[in-house]
Image 1 (spheres, helix red, strand yellow):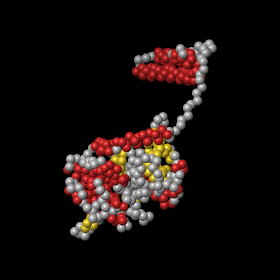
Image 2 (cartoon, helix red, strand yellow):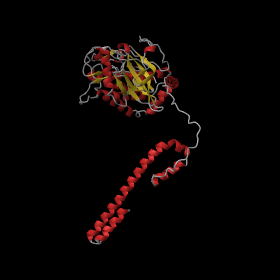
Image 3 (cartoon, helix red, strand yellow):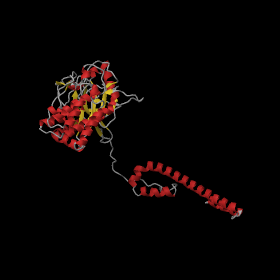
Image 4 (cartoon, one colour):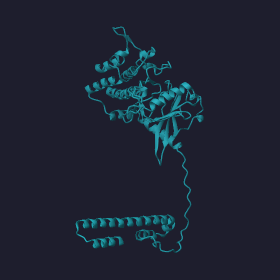
Length: 454
């Protein structure tokens, strides 16, 4: 249940829910001054905090016992009015509101008019890919590499969706995430994968701020050289992520020169001797220094990885992946559940009890005329059931009287409509018989009069 969300400049560090009171090194605001709510969301505990804002676990309450956990990302109040900061937040909010894909974190609400502004996102019960790899390495567990490849495939699916996003006129938005890393890929306890944190995403062909954002170890060479960038910088970052989860090491700087004189990163096979050469070649192409030599899209890299899985036994199931997450973080899940339950109990709204007056001792009501008088046969029959319970009759008498008056009028209207309906049918039959000459006119008139008299 760690929710690793970076701030706009990557300064927001992941904080475990098991230590929600961790000191905030970036904060210049007293804890008592921090908002206890964000719109209709009640803040339960802080998950992470950085120089630009904070991320909190919150809950929204509904009818009866309905509650839904969400993650709320808020701007820090002290800088919420800064023009550049607010513009960046609005850009993120605008993009987040359009993202709707199973492999991208879902945004429920964007409120830029709140003080401070906030985004409400889905709460993911899981861990980042970086957390999974680190814990696996700590306990000496090396899962089948196909599991890590499948996580990257799912993340690439969400990334390609973001790259292909269009505006309402059908024009490509040109989204570039710019902060792809294992820290921003979530894996839930059900084996689902979500790409998170579009806080520094670029929309369009160029970024006018001139600021390099993202994590340095995952930046493509052309980005560091301040050249124009496109989706291929995200493909490069995903290649770095795949290299690291397969080797359980940080990739570092390019280590050697190719025969053509280009810098190149070390191959996965030089670190993990047992790696399949075909998978090694896929990662190497994603890490090409020249953008033109890389996979052109996230979809192309995903297809290559899926082809490799098909040749090596097929894709692992979500159940396998979810079981791995649960096994690696079993103790943390129990502790975090306790923290969340305690926080929700402490912050639960106090509901006032309805004030009720005792009915007091009951005494038989005074005698009154029979209620069936003037009600009509059907309404009077319905009243006899109420008369069998005098106490209920005494309590419900005003409402009963109004209901019976309405019911009696309705039944009378129904009977009149039925009587006239029968008369019309009879008249139609008589006219039909007259037309064929089987009924004399005087007899026909007498028949109609008999029907109307009923």
